[in-house]
Image (cartoon, rainbow, N blue to C red; front, side, top):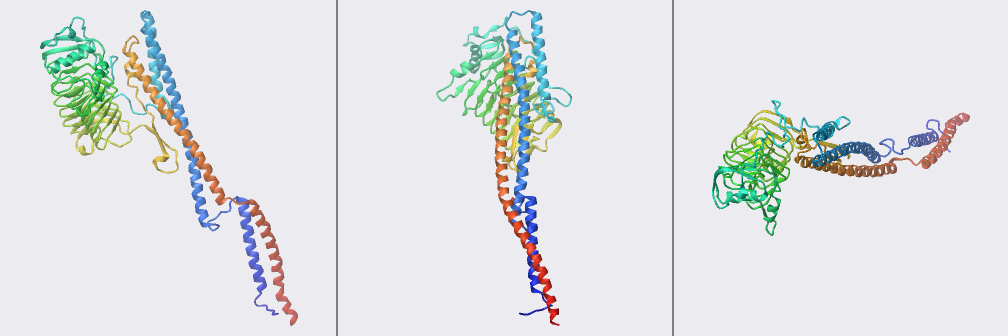
Length: 577
């Protein structure tokens, strides 16, 4: 046995054991006090990185769940407002039915109209003020009424037109039904009251029997659906045969409407109510929910026009579909004009697609506007697809989508002035398409973004983490009901259209509500699974750590006692001196 004083190996061993047991004891205390077995990167480098990522994701899911819950509250708020609007509109329809009973005097009718106008005012108020946390739900655009820089607006009157119509007395006119279809008409004014008479006009014009300056005046609203359906082949193609010819004559709608227009000829050109550019001039006519399918030169009212003019007409609802040169009102305005016209129909095409006209080679006259969904591939515009001249005092609010040369007002144009837009899209389209950036654009005002509510309901930037829905919607017929009498037969159609739009939006909100509830449930599941994973990786086993604590505490005390003994060993050497 050797005995040294320079090197106390026993002390070194005891010190090392005391240091190790103290470190392990401190680690056990830290784990039991924090509840985590990984508190520093040195504890478990890979585990620490995984734990940090999980912690970030768990916090993100917590916020996403809150976002979805707030979105659900917003949708429920909007849905409640829509239910109130639906109830008010139903009451409005009851008043309309009451007004048409024929048993009420002037005072009673005034009372009915007074309540109706009060309801209409309230509908406006709800639509314009419904909000959630300061966000307007239904009317966040500047205005759903086209409003130009000079302050003028395009609002349909009680008749449904942009210009007042002095309705002509047709009782003294010759009836077209009394005219021999085999003779030539070289002049005169004729009334049209029925589907049969309108079909007769088309047949005589197409046969070249109308050669003079004649005027044909509608005396009633006319539904041509029976004729259109009876003119279909076994492939369900056919329908209305466009009016061609009678170029020196006028078709005056006289404030009435034509409904039931149906054309399905996807392989035929020049399809519309009125076909070739040499056909009859049209004015003061409304076209309700047309369904027109053709190939090239396709429109609802006219396929094309040539020095004929289209004035004070509208196309409400429905759709127009074709390939090239497709417009909601007119396919091709060839040295022709359109003024005081509007369309609310959807327009679908491939090239030269517009809400009013697909192709225009002369100045588009003033006071035209379009709404609805306008979509195509090349040269797509809210008003005109391709314009070779000036677009003046036109307005568009709706949706426009395309691939190349897509513009809010026009896909291609050289001059755009005094126009208004208020569009409902997410893409950042210009006033004209990308290849018309040198166009002269003056006095064009509006908003170039869509009113969509975007909810972040996921934890990353992908589309799967976002839920969007369209809050804004238009009630085009509400303006027509303003100051209209409930005794007007047209109010039934206006009210039914409003109910349809409200119910459609309510259905849309219902689907969004279902999606948000599904999102919240899915987030909850992901949140719980991540918490479980994090617990497995980072949570301390208190039973295990308490055992380690006791063990290291005993080792620490033993090491301290042995260190004291080891430090006494060198003093034994003094006894040898």
